[in-house]
Image 1: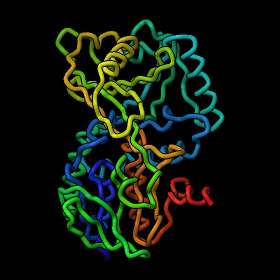
Image 2 (image 1 turned 45 degrees about the vertical axis):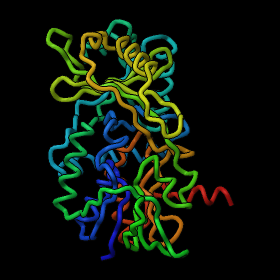
Image 3 (image 1 turned 60 degrees about the vertical axis):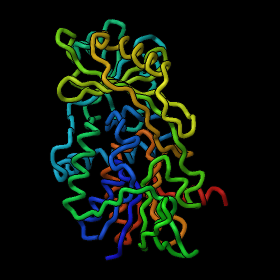
Length: 367
């Protein structure tokens, strides 16, 4: 089997490297700080239904297909913080309720029904939800995972499978005009390989001209809180909400932790946490879950999601022979990790990738 280099050791790169190595490919994983970046600060929602939006039906289909693979993926991986309690979506005002009603109707039209609940019914499910919430949805199939537990499990699994790790920055994928020949590191060293998988998240577009302009950084700020004695207990399920039109989510962690997110701005590669972002997240979270005002604020962070022009990921071959993309997952990196890893393994075997994620779709439009 041919040598494979995977650039990027976030959730996507680690998943692809693990699956490929476990199937017998010799794999080298290149990243200056494995398990960091957007994957380290992610909320960990596995939520294709509650992330659904009119016009993005293909993304919904990809997400649902990947969610179906998550139980087997987690079973193969071992303990990784998978939470199966489900998701509720809350709305605080009439405008927010109308938007959730529109989402429910859109999903019903696609054959994906969700349960509509009153504010009282939501509070029976999750007593932490406050009186400002007037109604919402219950989506038991939308799950969550502890992103940091998942990264640790993936790193261990990759090492057991024989993945070689090179903790260095990749500068470019190199080729001879027709075929990939390897990866040039920032110090000028070239690692030879006939197959390179680009899974470098928001930085993927800088690694080869074929990816130029297809991936952009989308900044998201998150907060991590911890339950304190005497404070109202955190929710058991993921709680997503619309607060005066602004989205906010709260994802529980074992031990009383809660991840609050996420802002969304396009400011290049800036990862500064802003005072306004922290204020807005705390204000909106408290409207939905009043008890969080008594929690400890233990971490603020910002990550760069890899966005694409149509919000669908890039999974497949493009450019010179041997160049594979596994990037552009936007808000859905955790969710799409099983599907992406399976797709990359299929590509290595000569099978076609998922048509709705084919990176060549943009080349076809430009012709």
